[in-house]
Length: 543
Image (cartoon, rainbow, N blue to C red; front, side):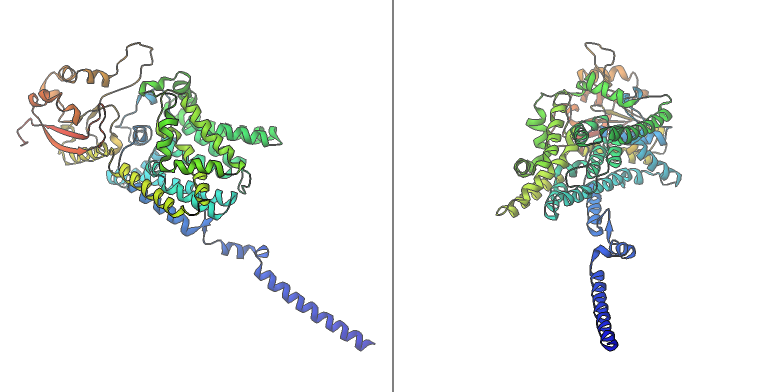
């Protein structure tokens, strides 16, 4: 009896040991039971939650993108960021536009670039090569844009699958307007970056990374940098509020604390640099929305965004966007509503620009990716068409169109550094105001002047700024401005369209053309195809 019982218990122990061995084998195979050390080892190849090689490729692409954009877009690219940052750090010379004297802009965004300039200055590396040729601020913007690209890819992987995410990612990377804008130091670029990253944490159906504090913090920061950033977020915030069961907690524990902290930081930063307490976000909205004084810089018909703006920004992605709108699941309706809402709100403002709707472009890429995913026979031709059409446009706008205003600043750089006495040279830019960057692209204390164009804030019915007065009668303005030869600048910078009109002054004052820079194939109004530099031959040095 004991032997039988002993044999039975022995057999049972053998079976238990074999079962235990099998369980150990499962433990090694299953990722559910990986130890913390094994998990960390398995994730060593990850960055931003994605494959490290994909992330590095995206960053490298955006850096490459940065160096292939050598043209100017709009004055705000410099005058609301780099020029302000340069003035903050090197305040012995520089210039702030009327928007800063009227406190319509905040210092939070320029402070990012000012910090970079200050570090270079402290290291003794604040030469023009680092500030402009290597484009430290733009490289930083390029890296942030790459992070936003990866967040869009990660979000689509969570919401759908890797195939949809791949095509959304492809559409995002090959978008010509994204290529054209994503490395520029525009507040619109930072607004777009923060919007995409915030969307990654927004509670969309199927999202695994939702975090109310993170996304609301990013939205608040975008609002501080550019108050109109709240426009595309109004339907998104409203949807979150409606779907949230604990509405009071959402407001009291998330939105209000985040808003209070972010706005307080903005107030403190502006208090330091303005010297008084200023709510620039209110001033900005009051000027551009309530008073609609943005019309001073041009106005367009109400349908402009639908008839021209949006089709141009989306480009050849447009048919895929429309196709994707019909295919995408209902959970993406909120993204489509956000796009339409943004277009409608901006359509109600008289002053319109392509860059204003840039923040909703990545949302459009979601629908474009959906369209490509469902293409069967025509997928390869469609991909080839998208890539080639966008890259041709991106390379032309990035390397050719409107490059003269940057090339001429490099020429002024050389004038300054080659001049034995920097005060002996002086520059007058006779072009539409803010056509060129300023001291941020010269970084030399050479006397420079340009035609001013502040808007009328007093309510005059027939207000003309300095640029308007000049273009009404350039010769008369020049003769009134310069009474004798001693007051004449050594160099004049003009667009080619102005040359014939002021030729009598150029000849009588002994100016000779010394440099020509191509600017655009599409001259319009006061903007010519080329930029001319005239130097005064006061001592017979020129031939």
